[in-house]
Structures are given as C-alpha cells and as structure tokens.
Image 1 (cartoon, rainbow, N blue to C red):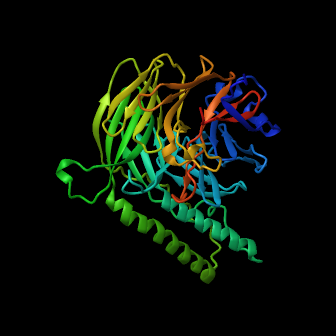
Image 2: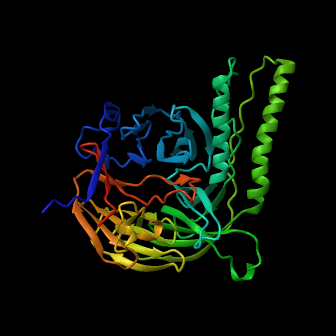
Image 3: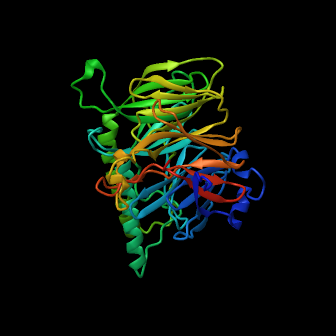
Length: 453
C-alpha cells in the first residue's frame, strides 16, 4: 500500500537573508513573538522589529529583497504588522508600526505611501473581500486595521486608485529623460490621504484581535436609512468575544474622501507655482502634526465574559459568516457572526492556530470522474485547519458540524499560513479554492495541504 501523503512540497525559503531574522536557530520561526509572516501566491514576507525580508519560494519567483523602513528613534517605533496587497499586476507590501502608521512598499523597496491611522500600536492588518453573487447582494473589498480598542476600515477601491496612480507615475518617470526630483518630505505623501472609517470598540476593554465580518442590517428604527452598517467582532482579555454595529460615517466617507483627493492636489499645485515665481530661499516650514481622525459610531450588540478565559486570536471564513476564536484555556470557539452564537467548541488546543480552507469532498458525480473535469465552487466543502503545536499535529474539520477529515503529524517549529486575498479577481475566472500552506521554519520547506481526501 502506498504511503498516504497529506501535503505537497512546493519550494524552500532557506537563504542567507533570513540570518538577520534569526534563521539557523531551532524554533526561530515560532519562538520569536516579534517575527511576522505574510504569504502571497509565490512569495513570503517576514519581518522583525526593523527589517522586512521578501522572498520568492517558487521557481517562477526568485525575489530576494530587504526593506528597512525609516522609523522614529525618538518614539522607539518598530514594525508590528505586515501584509500583502495584490491588485492584478500590482503587488505591494504593507507594514503597520507601533506608532500607528501604515507604510506601503513596492517590490523594489521604495516607499509608496505613508499614513497615520491613529497614534497607537497596529496589532494586525486584515485583507478580505466578498464578490457579488447569489449569497451576497453587494461586493466589498477592504483592508481592516486592528489596534487596541479600535478598528479602522480602508476601502479597497481607494487603495487601488492610489496604487494605480503610483504605477502610472512610475512608468512615466521611467520613460521621462529628465525626471523631476522630489524632496525628502514628498516621499510617501504624494498621493494624498487615503479616506477611511475609524471606530472605538473598547466598551468591553481593549481587544487582542478584531475583524469586520461584513455588512449588517440597520437598527429597527432606521430601516429606511441608506447608511451602511458593518458588524465588528473583537476578542480580548475582559470580554472573550464582543460584537458591535459599526455605523458608516457618511460625512467622512463622502466629503472627507473628496477633500482628501482635491486638497492635496490643489496644495501641491499652488506650492509648485509659488516656488517657480518667487524662488524663495527660505526653508520650507515644518509640517503640522497629523491629527487623529474622529471616531464614527459603534453600538455594542453583545459580549461574552467568562473570567479567567481570554480571547487570543480570530480568523474569518471567506464569506465572513463564521469565525474561529482561540482562547487562553486551550479552547477553539466557532462563532456564527450573523446570529452571534457559538455553534461549536473544541477543547485541548493550547497555542493553536486556525485557518479556513476548502476540500474536495463531492467526487461521486459522473462529471467529476472525467479527467477533463474542472472542479467548481460547489464541489468544495468549507473546512477548518487547526495546527496544535503542543501536539505536533494538523487537523482538518468539516464545517459546521462535520467530522474530522484528516489528522497528520507536522515538524516542530512549523507554522500554517494562507495567501492574502487578491483584489479584483473576476467571478468568471476559474475558481481558486482557499488553501492552507505549512512552513517548516527549521528546514525552510514550504508545502500546501492537499485538498483531496
């Protein structure tokens, strides 16, 4: 009988560039709490407090890049979050810092954009989207910024417009024989301020993790309102789980968006003309400090307090209707984010990590037996991959109440990862199932979990 394989090896990230992140020492990938990982289809970004290393792990992508963000030594600023943003031909790396800044970097290592969200530590960056189909009336793509007691939302279309403008400027400068020089203060500020919404979700204490699960119905007294409401879920020390109705700030989303685009462009034009006319020798005045954006309304819906249990990490299903939450007592809670009820519970999984994935379980049809058959979305079943490092195993459970489909041993020092959401992917294109990758830090080997039983 042939040996059953649960993963397929894809490549390796082992290289000299990882030495600065502690590679070469056993357990370097999982023992360092300041080491961050973000996965793209063929590349990985790893970061510690002061450097970001971007590596291609497939034969088609041999990228090797080190990015050293300019951080404030006065505030002892350091990198606290990292994620990929993928828009068709544009791929960038985004870092969040302990001072509340978002830094957008190109794969050439150049700073594209720098923006303050709120002057507190950024805990996590979430990139997700839902396409318009039979189950979703509208499409939504966003970047969610999680901070202690706060959540911010950037619309994907605003970021895409900014990156497209940067891409066009880059192409035009490439062909321009006499490129214009930019001052040091212009880098990262040339494309205006990205509009966003900001909410305070600290009514039940600061959060360790949070997510915006999607659009929710308005309150009963505001049925006729055209305002959008989002559902926000937080986990933390004081309340294991909290839920909020997040009101879209119309004044900010419309007027603020217009001002954020028009004012910087107008100011830049006036400043350029004034320099041409007067040629003033005086130094440019210092920039005024960025003021934090006011909070939009966040209405508490419910919370679960169960001392001494503490919520630790949260992961969302692709549709946002399910959330897997790990706590300090070694339990995993499966939350229905629409009904706001716990629908499943696992015990004995301390320090576990969870990621949703899709498995091929419907293979009994005549069409699926054909060698030319291309699986569709309906052929896949939503599952939850659980990595239990203390047990040294990875388990895959069928959602919502299905059995355990698979369990296998994994090497110590491994971590499960998932490629970031790709903005703007067409519904008509072949369906790409949600996959989970396994990175062995000690060997550098990266594998994908097989999606067939």
